[in-house]
Structure formats: structure tokens, C-alpha cells
Length: 248
Image (cartoon, rainbow, N blue to C red; front, side, top):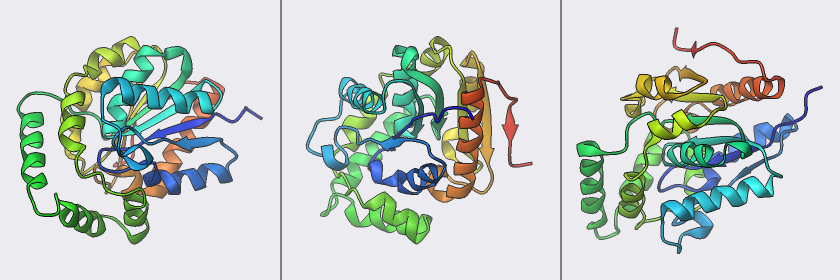
């Protein structure tokens, strides 16, 4: 029987490690050690300023806590930093899963996103009601509860987006020699450059999860868990697989 592969989860912006509770439970049933960290400015680290160095250090702490070599799984913001970490520390990453992270973080889309975040922050509650309402409308009750359980960081958006705009994920994917899975929901607006991201990988696969939004692991938790199970089996056996499109 192949050895269990440790899994480290990295959350999206304005969420926390609690968004992975369902995935942690499913992996525990399969005997895989797993951990979901909080990035600076989020969850248990909400008072810390968000920086690239701080985010990568948080991931490194999680990798070390799991004993070294992991399957690194990041969603959205977490996906970009998982890509960057894998490029810098390939010896610590047995495989990389970047979900909802296939748009180049720069140019006018990033500027528009930051401008919107600044407008929302001017609301009397800094956007708390708007954020929680959208989460509860777009996700199942369980998914919404997991997303909100770690608290809602109200001030991290501008710093988080600004820091992420300094990353070069295409270059980082090209530097990482291990297997990469780009996992996107079929309705994800961050699929904008997914073919460029796939082409940048040395050993990349693209997985499209049908009827899933940007928050693919929360929108379709069972399908996402099934994708992870297949990836873990492949990493354990070191057998590469083909590009997969589950939408067909």
C-alpha cells in the first residue's frame, strides 16, 4: 500500500483555514495527514500585516509541521502563493494543486478589483454585511459556515491584492519541476488565462469541475475531494496522468 501523502491547504482571500474543514474531514477518513493554515491578515493571524514574505513563511511553517514533503493545495489567493512557494522550495512539494488561480494577477483587472475593495471598505461596516450575505447566497449552509467560521478580515484586501500583484505565477510554474494540477470550476471567472498557465507548467494537468464557481472546493466539495483523491494516488505512485475535463 503506498504511503499516505501529507496535504497542506492554503485558503483564499478574506477567508481562513476553516474553509477547508470539509476537505480535512474527508482526507482524515482516507488516512491522509492534512493541515489548513491561516495566512497573515486572516483567521488566527488577522492582526498580522499581509506580505509576500509572511505568506510564504506561513506556508513553510505548515509544511514543516507536516514533516516536510507535501501535496500543496491552494485556492484563489492561496493558489498563487502555493505556486510561488513550490517554485522556491520544490524539494518540499511532492505535487501542486492550484485551484481558481488561472488569471494573471496584474494590469487593469487587478486595479479594478483593488478599487472595488477600497469602495467596499468605505461602507459603515467595511463590507461585513455584503460579504457574509454573498457567502450565504452563493454557498450551501455548510460551506458558508466553514467559510465564515474563522472570521472575516475587513482590512486585508488592498494589501493582499497589492502583494499578489508582485508575483509572476507563469514564471514560477515554469520553475517548478514537479506535477501540477490546475483545478477550476466551470463557472470560475479566474479561468481567464488557464491555457497559458497550463502551457507554463513542465508537468501540468487541467481539471474542470462542472457546475462549480470560483470557490470550487466549497461549491462542489465531494467532486473536489474526488479530484484530490485521484491526485494523491497519482503522487504516491509517481505515475503521470492526462489532462482531465470533467465537464464533458
